[in-house]
Length: 76
Ligand code: SF4
Image (cartoon, rainbow, N blue to C red):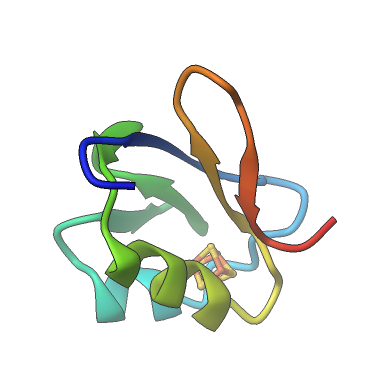
């Protein structure tokens, strides 16, 4: 995974704006108008991002491998 780039997104139809993601990773996510968004859509692979995504109570944070599009989380 070293050297991989990951694409972050938030599913607007799932996010309830709880802010859990932004609280645990304020450099990665922010909440605006009740919807979380990634600060940067494509970032270096970082295990912390999986933890943050998995902490979302709505499974709204999607992490994909940039290029292949492989979905890392949430489970389908
Ligand atoms: S933790 Fe999930 S539901 Fe809460 S703001 Fe972040 S993406 Fe939205």
